[in-house]
Length: 120
Length: 115
Image 1 (tube, each protein chain N blue to C red):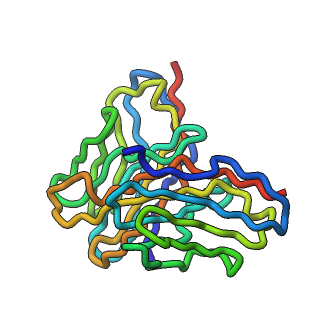
Image 2 (cartoon, each protein chain N blue to C red):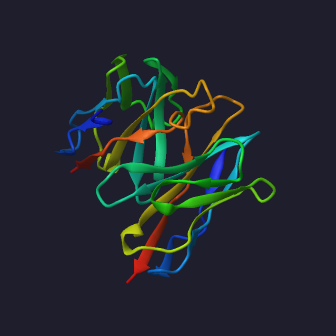
Image 3 (cartoon, rainbow over the protein chains, first blue to last red):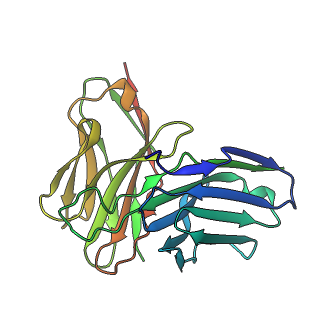
């Protein structure tokens, strides 16, 4: 498997524009997470899905942010309108629920390489 | 609410010496504990985890971590550091009993290994 794939790797946009970040999780994984990393705030969980259903979106900063997972192999994080303070690295991660504790491969979140967003 | 504290922003160690990166956590009930490493311009990579069982957990690249329930700690260790271990290390926790899958990360500790 190619791992978690995020696109684009870099995005530069102007304030007020719409930004869409994309994520393809590892095939077969049933959890998908969106994180944001900044120097000031570190790694923050924005939202996570289980079987394509949003479970916890309490980390989404405000209504300008929205996330969807239309199917098991694709998710988007949209910012509209974007602001300079949204500049950060956005990571997507996926994992597989551990149904059998002996299987040490489960319950691990696998991260994509991230999207570095710069809002000018 | 769950939280993770990594009290050191940076740890410096000479190559060949043992290293320790500290982590303490707070969670309701029993924890899942993780260590991740981040190299420049890369995503986080899983190193090791504690779910249950032995308190000493061995992971990738010769790293290990010791779960101490009474001290709510999960320090990362390696007997002999390599220059290539220089990176940003994150400790993370989730609450096993609630079933909440999301991880809460610490602020990260930058490990610098000098030749």
